[in-house]
Amino acid sequence: MAEKKSLFQEFSKGIIKENPVLCLMLGTCPTLAVTTSASNAIGMGVAATAVLICSNAVISMLRKVIPDKVRIPAYITIIAGFVTIVQMLVKAFAPAINDSLGIFLPLIVVNCIILGRAEMYASQNRVIPSILDGLGMGVGFTAALLCMGIIRELLGSGSIFGLQVLPVSILIFILPPGGFFVFGILIALANKLNTKAGKKVVENPCQGCPMSKTCKSSSVTQCEKENKEVTENAG
Amino acid sequence: MLVKSLVSVFLAAILTENYVLSKFLGICPFLGVSKKLNTALGMSVAVTFVMVLATAVTYPIYTYLLVPNDLAYLQTIVFILIIAGLVQLVEVVLKKYIPSLYQSLGVYLPLITTNCAILGVTMLVLQKVDTTAAFEYTYLHALINSLGAGIGFLVAMVMFAGVRSRLESADIPKSLKGLPITLVSASLVALSFLGFSGFVDKLIPM
Image 1 (cartoon, rainbow over the protein chains, first blue to last red):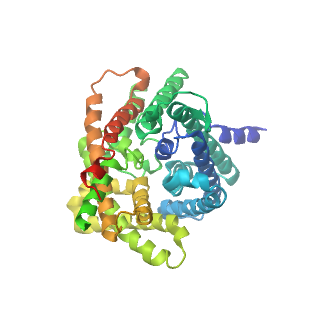
Image 2: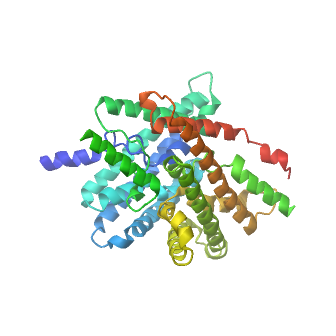
Image 3: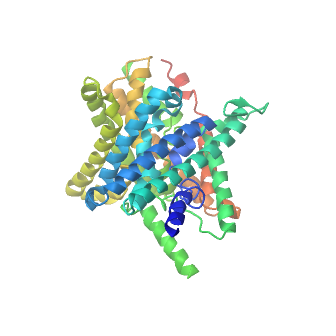
């Protein structure tokens, strides 16, 4: 019984509690770029989820085989393989989505959510929890994208899923500045809800980044320093 | 004609097609490393360097190795491996031969492998070869485009570092503090770059 509950938690934590986009600040590039319409957002979300589940499963299976030193290149190769498969499938069965996602479909390779989950979760856990973790994170990613997509499409072209609902539209919301703005406001909202629930708020986008361990860039060290100060102050 | 098209490609990559502000590539370093001017500068120089180098290597491999052998579908996997290897190589070479440069740029190199701007530029350049009708898009154009993309990244980073230093002393509502206000100001910077649309075409008519 306890096992079952924890498996469900592995799945559900990605959706709200540790939402990869709104709480962990991962995968910001596709979040901003493909959310000009709700259907684009779903297409991207589903493609990334598929890659996430497969790569988590394979990396978890191989976690004892891959030497620690070359793990990042190994993960990237595995992920790139699955991205290529997804790319071919999308091209064959949903060419419209392939056209609208464009370059961001192959760019799933460098999406930090996928590498991040490989590094933080799949490399240390068994296969079934890793798959569920991937599924949960994927659903969380899709939900955040859909949320952005609906807001931007509604305000920017006055429609939802292509269905006209508003007589007026504010074009700027589907242009790049609108993407930054809507994302900023959504994170502010998530922060507000998180502080209300008494949870920590992500301040530096580097914090959740999978490369933060290997990266010695001063901003991360700085952010670690700040974190230390915060924890010391809190303690 | 050649010079004209090169200048047009270069300016377009910096201003109208800015990779950060209008194509949303490389947002992570844009938000993460732009807090201080010197780190923003170091990161952008490293990115520009790797971008040009990566394009210089991936373009011939794609056109002369992958396409003739019907392996174009391997583009993603081949490119990411080339970039990962290249970044490692640059790190080793800099460490051995130019330690002073390694000191200032080395810290950013591990981050660059997973920087979507690099992979994005190498792929978008090849898309342009097929879609540009006005003039023949050569290897030289591809390199200039990557250089422009890097400089555009630098311009955006440096401008944004300036904006963020002003934000430090501003009185901001509690919920907006930190990342949200950074994104909202990024939106305003992106808005200003929208003003360049059509600028290059008018300046240098083809």
